[in-house]
Amino acid sequence: MGRTVPAVTRALDVLELFLDRPSLSAPEITERLGLPRTTVHELVTTLTDRAYLIPTPGQPTRYRLGMRLFQLGSVFAEQLDLAHEAREVARRVAAHCDETVHVAVLDGADVVYIAKVDSTHPVRMVSAVGRRLPAHCTGVGKMLLSGLSPDALDARVPRDRDLPGMTPRSITSPTRLRARLERIREAGLSYDECESNEAVYCIAAPIYDNTGDMVAAMSISTPSLRWNDELRDEWSELIRRGAAELSQRLGHRPPSP
Image (cartoon, rainbow, N blue to C red; front, side, top):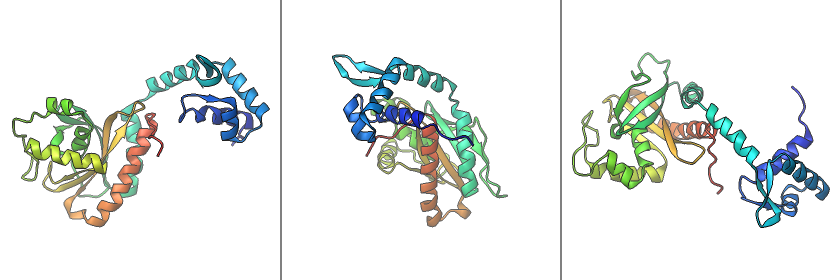
């Protein structure tokens, strides 16, 4: 392992201050980082010369992020592969719970599974990457539907006709579905309680991209014979962490508290 370079670390510290503020002055940077004024002046001058920072128009003593960072971010975004990143994170989540983990995206009124890691248990959920299911019957699907605007939801799930069911516990009423989606938005978690398969429970959490849009959802699925309230609480935290890690890999940064 090589050693870190202090000057580079300080330069990165300066840039990361702008994640929370659109513009900063040199004195503000000095105060926030606790560095000598001469050091901050040299860092800001160097970053400005390389177009990582630019003076704010009309406020030449203040700085904002420059075009070079946008170019680097664009290259990074082009290299992102949601399915690949999803498989990597899903493997880690599955290793903790030894249950089947899925990542799915919304396509019309359906979900399509883009990544899956199987449980090692002999009794486990049977599914496949590429499989399509009605979104309102699944944990991942309800999670994704909860992220839509009212107009987008109405376009995919009309209010004036019942929904197809997959099991006796499926939600078939558009009104009931919308009430459930409201609770999902508040909780940040979604459940499939034998709604797509009479013998399977799922718990799902949202995945966001660098723009803050919900682009996918991740779930843990288990046969009902292994489901209990204790695991529900444990896996709620596990799936939140897994979805947050995948969101971070996609460039998402949650708002500051």
